[in-house]
Each structure stands twice: as structure tokens, then as C-alpha cells.
Image 1 (cartoon, rainbow, N blue to C red):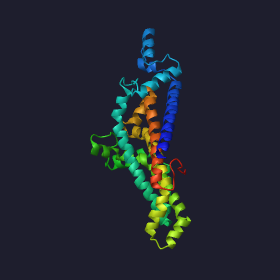
Image 2 (cartoon, one colour; image 1 turned 180 degrees about the vertical axis):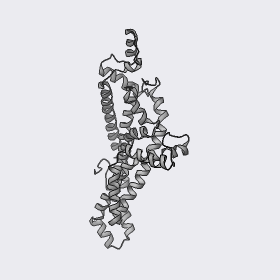
Image 3 (cartoon, rainbow, N blue to C red; image 1 turned 45 degrees about the horizontal axis):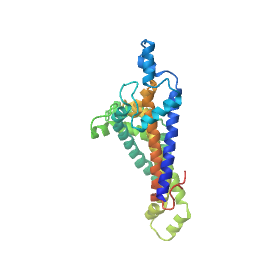
Length: 317
């Protein structure tokens, strides 16, 4: 059964990536402006020079021919050459990927630890703790990442001087130090979302009959919470955690710009502004691929979290 499920999901993944690649390529193709204008840097050029540039990037081919050639190159690992940097796109992505991945990983740890922790406390303690968590998560959800970045820079970099306000650092320890504030700004919104999902799903499970029966049988409260409340609520929490990864990837564009980080988000932003279409297409496709793969991983882990759930029959929030 798992083999059939994997084959079906891999076919769906392939179809999604092909459809996404077509949409990404079409969006960049239809965007206003001409790439050769940036290549020439505002200088005048002979018709022969302009024709050579258009031939190099296949700009005179019909749309479907351009898409077919681009997709064929992508499948062989050739993501093209950057219009802005005049370098292979794959090399640009490889150089910036470690910083972005570490930033996302640090933010995800903060989201899981504080999101689940605050939701757990809110559901179990109730009263003043519940109200404080609800107010705190409302502020977190209502604060855009770039606003959180500005506040964190002012407080912890300018006023207290505890953390640097720009740069990614060199070496793992220095990178973690430099990325602490960006990861916090990136995680803030999703901490609020996951805390609210955890609180709601746990309160829902606590009101079910099987929990009442478990308590009536004399099972300790801590065991009831672990085995019958949190375990059943974990499905919804895992789904939201998977969506969080995709949200963090998209939000890196704003956070990396605010902190002057040289990651993929910053590269995407600068590439969009100068119509560097090979870079925009490659990073957009990478984000879609990451979203699809994370969704597949969440699907595969569901039966491990909750044996009542069959593969491919995952419940939705």
C-alpha cells in the first residue's frame, strides 16, 4: 500500500512541479520590460549586438519553444546564466543557500518550541495564562515581519548592543549569532499561529469522550494529556508545522532585506527589480518544490503520529 501511495504522490508532485514551472515561466515572460535593456545598461547598441543578445537568451523564439528549452535545461541541472551577475544561476543559489537554510531552520525551531509550548500552557492552565497567551499571540500574528525586524534592531542592536543588525557572519557559531534577530523576526508570526492551533486542537481533544473515560479509569492526568490529548492533537499541529516551513521560505525575502543578509530571499528581491529572469525562475521553482516536498513528508509522517489515519486520508484543519 505504501508503494502505491508513494508512486501516486510522486506523480502528483511531478505534475505540480511541471504546472508550477509553466506558471513561473509564463509570469516572468509576461512581465513588463525587456531583459536586453538591462544587459545593455542603458548604452546604445547596434542592431547586430541586440540580435546577438536575444539569440543568446532565445528571446525571439515563441513562448512554448522558450519554455521547452528552459525546462530541458533545468532537468539537466542547468538553470541558465544570471543577467545581472553574468554567472551560472546554480552557483549563485549554492553560495546563498546555507545562510537561508540556517535562518529557516533557526526560525522553525523557535516556532515549534514556543508555538507548541505556549499553546500547551494556554490549553492546560486556562485563566490568566490563557488570556496572556491569547493577547501575546494576537500581537504576534498582527505584526508584519519587517515591523518586527525594525523593532528588534532598535531594541537589541541599537539600544542594548547585544546582537549585530546586519550581515550573516562566518562559521557556524558566528552565523547563529548574526541570524538570531532575523530568525526571531521571521518566527514571530508563525509562533502565534502555531500556539493558537495547538491550543484549539488540545481543547477540542480534552472535551472528547475517550478522555473522560480515561480519567474515570483512574489514569493519571499527565498520562491522559500525553497519550489521549496531545497525541491526538498532534496531527493538526504537524500539518500547520509543514505549512509553516513554506511560509518561512516566502517571508525570508522581507527579513533578509531588512537585516542586509546575502541569502536567497535577498537575491530574489534584487533579481525581480532588474528582471533577471533566469534567477527569478530558478528560485521560484525551488520554493514550489520545497513546498511540495514538505507536504509529502507531512503526509508520510501522519500514520506514524496517528495510527488511525491511513496514508492519503489525512484530515484537514
